[in-house]
Length: 114
Length: 112
Image (cartoon, rainbow over the protein chains, first blue to last red):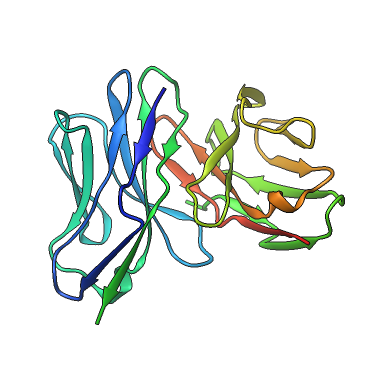
């Protein structure tokens, strides 16, 4: 069965500094990996995905994520954080052997301080 | 393209009452999902439809929750009777074959 871990409940970073939100996963087959962001009272918004190909994936709003198969990780990164990036971030995985069912991590709250 | 539409946005009911949520997916998306997101947790899949058939409802509490997608487009999720622990945001999502989901804004249910 697939699972996702986001080891940090909360990440604090100063505006302008680089940010990293961590995600590790477990699947039996090849993983399809996703990052979503959730702003207060809003639905989940898609940021980026890794299906195959280049391990560095670029997404919306300047975010990128690096797929590391040996470490089973898919950390979300941004070179320079903005206060408006403050939100809840969810990593999700879909195992190619388990249809279209996604499993979401518990979420990491990112706070960017001015 | 229009997004996934959900209604109502908010609902407050007393325990043991019933409630229904509605979802209209993106046009042409064959797969529709209902997720439950309890405060402080990630979304948990309740049920997945492929057109009007159920693909996965293993985590749906079938004694009180039901869902249907009669014509393979709109879907409704019902809770009867509601319990306090059902307080959550109920998210609807749809997908095509490009591996990603599009989520609606959700319905925030408060059971008092």
